[in-house]
Image 1 (cartoon, rainbow, N blue to C red):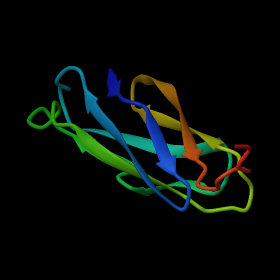
Image 2 (cartoon, rainbow, N blue to C red):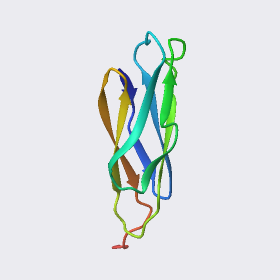
Image 3 (cartoon, rainbow, N blue to C red):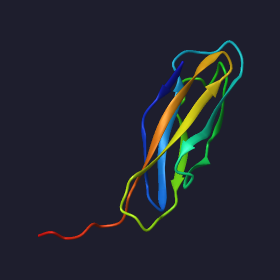
Length: 106
């Protein structure tokens, strides 16, 4: 029932995730995105709760994630869960793309 696209987040910045329903609900439904596990420096900045109605179900919604900066050069990940009444929860892995430049080997 969820229509989703993947999400990458810039370290010490933001990234977006797009969400909509693939069919009209019969009444108002609330979709929630919550942190489950992984790097706690990755979080939902805005749009973590979305309300869909029979009138707006097909409009793409933006969920913005943010990632804290760190001193390592690794891409961190975190798993979030999308839930909505009556639908099996879905997992989403968000990757924080590291902003540290590695050693120049040229």
